[in-house]
Length: 310
Image (cartoon, rainbow, N blue to C red; front, top):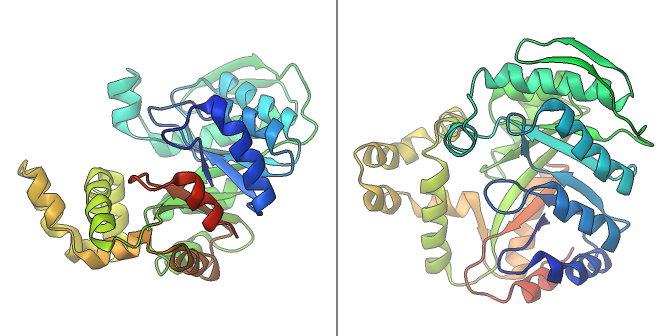
């Protein structure tokens, strides 16, 4: 499950995390965009759900320096030894450049260099040297890690998927259908963890779910990296009208042009039972860690969490 939950203060979510554990959920993964940071909710979860796996999906490699990123990860790894994975990714030019004033240069190399830095730092080594995208002189974690966290990479297309396979412990992907998973998994290869954030609207109001889903799809899949991802997946013909209208400035027309079947592929919706069956298709096709992301649309979220329990 993705945390923190929308519309509920972090202070009030402690009991939710305990209940999630009792309901049989195995993992809690945080996100980091423009709400809360990725690490504090996991610190709360580490205390109140002491048997659950924790992860970040994902933290940008630009907005924290490599040393600070290692320290933040080390804090959660110490709270939850053997249960924490750090997911890192490029994020986007909007978040990195427009919101944080940091140059979004050579994202592939920046992720690769960050993996290598974190590997060495988590081993307790003194990291001293020039990487292609940053330099570090004499950094060493001051508190040895009992269990180094796994490192997962946010990956969509072949380049980053292969990097995740070669140098990390796995990959985190999103905005794909259950049938798309086979193509992604085959590209990454075997022996690595593949996690996916899966967007869920637990409602039998299909018209409402599709309307909300189209809005979300138009906001994300017009970003260049996601557009390229869906071209690669073979969804270019379905999404071409949206992309054209979006470039023309016709936002409402772009949203309306998204076919219903694309929404049904990319957004899990329906009754709790139907949602669980749909999510299981992701697992059957190769997702090791299906991470539900509940999209709030006015339903009782706590009731939904209980009904969606494994």
